Amino acid sequence: MVRAADEAALYRVASRRARQDVQRTERVDVRYSVDEKSEIMAEARRLGLAGAHFVGAVVMAHLHSDHVLPDHRTRIDDLIDELAALRTQVARIGTNVNQIAHRLNAGGNPHSGDKDTLATADQVLVHARQAATAIDTVAVAAATTHRDA
Image 1: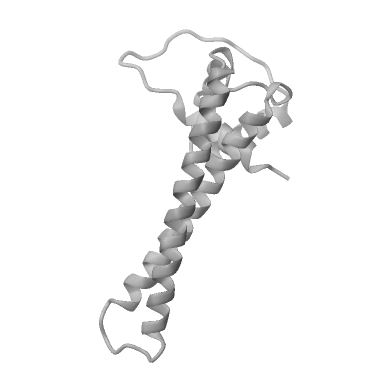
Image 2 (image 1 turned 90 degrees about the horizontal axis):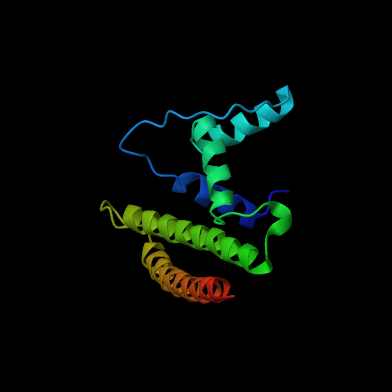
């Protein structure tokens, strides 16, 4: 089972490596088994990255202490990444509810339950916004604690 923290950390690190104005020309050759290469390429594809970009981003992040190896992670690292994953899920709930509300408000002949459904959707959006704000607050506090530690 993949934990949300691991998933979020990997995506955050891999997508953070910025392009440069000039092409990178230096190489480091690494050898992998067929199975290791397959795993690396599958993960890179899943994240929408080139294999070299993925490997380079993970290595550079580790060197810059942005991402530690799995056995060097702290509980706060896990907490921050779990909160990031949770925030994404709450945002998706809000998006889905907005789509439902948009569909119900799109005109045409309303059904008898549409008014109640819209009222409920509005309540869900309020709760989703409150949850997202609370998650953001806790994540900032955790990151500040982690940075100062």
